[in-house]
Image 1: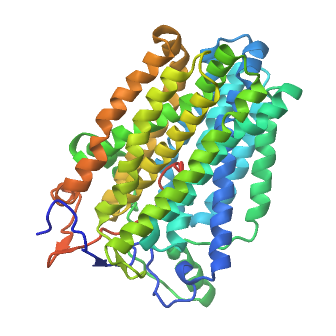
Image 2: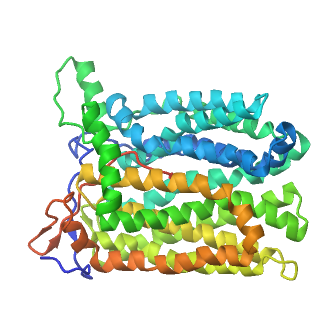
Image 3: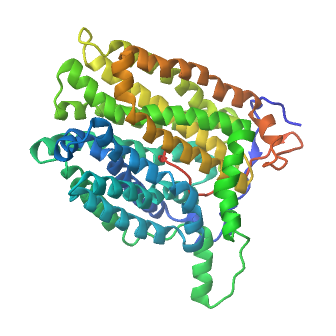
Length: 502
């Protein structure tokens, strides 16, 4: 039996992904495509996810305008952000079933235009009720783009570099969300809050044009299309997401709910990511408000503060990719046919956990008139670096923690739960800051984050043992070798995005 702690030189042969049911030598296999074709498919997925992520936070720049236009409170105006996220939370539940039946490309090219129509409706809303409804349905129909990006990247890139490619796909959600206040901080003061939606519409249209001609990447759909073209019959293995409605509901609804109370690995990771995303999205409400009240920042200057968040996301991609390269080398995994023990994917989250709690105290105790405004702004950049490093590592770990069906259920829970929390906290964050003062409001999150440092450490030490005891697992050890779980090419999260989506 394998010890609870991963061995320093323990490498394993890497099995083919369950979703990659094509021969490794098949020229139609997306992993055998030329580099430029892989990059194009990845760029299109990134553009679609970027557009939807931009739309999530776009309305936060127009909160004051919404309040004045419709005579509503700040909390009610913030619902435009929260309802969009609540709509997206359904995407991890439904998208795997759509993708399995139709492939990835049709879902992308139906999802984004409907998202754009509801964004257009939000921009032309005559009352707050219609704005709220349009924002919710924009999230509901745009959400699959944030989910599918993970499947697309898993289709074309090797599992050997899971942490690296997941860090790159997470950029779509993090930078998309971060760019909205930067860009719209220029636009809204010159126009109106409605342009938060019109600019989002323009970006979605540009992404759609970029995607025209993108090839299908889902191996099962490639096989089906090839069989139809050649007039052959084909019989594929049963879809892991289920065939009947009862099976589909079991995989992406009932089993995730059961895992939320029975599966220690999933419980720990889900709770940590819920904290992570809740705090992440409240910055889009808190940063402009605090910078305005404390330093007299205009909407334009407050938007520029999110440059620190974009830099933090870029730096996370660099550090997570570097750590994966170093741990692979340390474990003697120098080619695509071998992979380091699964627990080594957690290393970026161990490092990021230290930055997460430190940044919360940093921001809470330095956002005051006697301290230069660059100090708390840099702190938000550190938070984003930590947040994305943790997300990248923990989701990459779960990708192969269980057999395919168990992984799909776990990722569904993790994605939907953290998106719901991301939508909830912004509704109360201003009240928390006013009631507790900023330093104590963020200290509450900081102390929780200190406790969460134990999550990646516990999983690194005992994760293999916990996983093998799970009823959702199959034996993953043989002859002392770490046997990787199936690398599911399923379409879960944000972050991207969220990351995406994670």
